[in-house]
Length: 111
Length: 119
Image 1 (cartoon, rainbow over the protein chains, first blue to last red):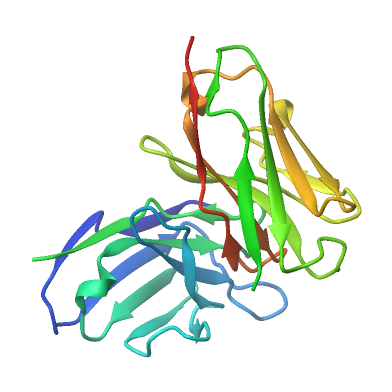
Image 2 (tube, chains in turn purple, green; image 1 turned 30 degrees about the vertical axis):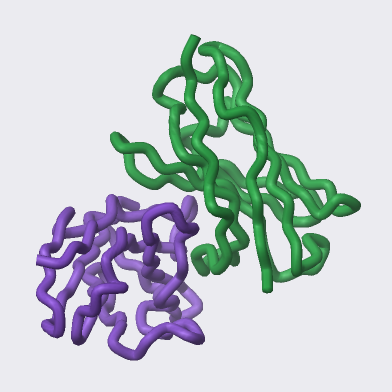
């Protein structure tokens, strides 16, 4: 499964919303009914951190300005109000089909 | 808190074998429900799952690398390992180890280790 993520670079404005898209070339609905799409944040020099799993479930401790949505083949990570600490590399990952595949990533910087 | 740490040579010669170990703390590998995996990140190809292994040694490899990959687990040391044979410059990457579900993506990652393939 190919995960096409866009944009590769996102100049975001502090306090403004920002969104990142991931599109798959086949449906990510699993036979068990779940849609296994995760979103990750990777700050420079740090290990990736999972923000969202199963499309829209937020990990414990993740600020509620981060949200995940989507279905089928189209998925989105939204930041409702960008903060300076959100500068990072973000990527999506699908786990519905083996092998799990990842998007190319989006570098979020402050404009 | 689950923590993972990669270790191994940072430089490997072309055609030789890349070997990395991941040491897990805060969680026993032999506990069921999770797999243990390797993911690499390159500027050119981006992020790629190499494979994952269960505590009983059942391993699953990405078809794109399957012919060159072997993973193993040592529950007594709470470690798992990666071997990648016949490496080329294209295998130069940051290698991450991680805990993951069969369908859920990794929930805990190591900080990553850069491996350069060069003579």
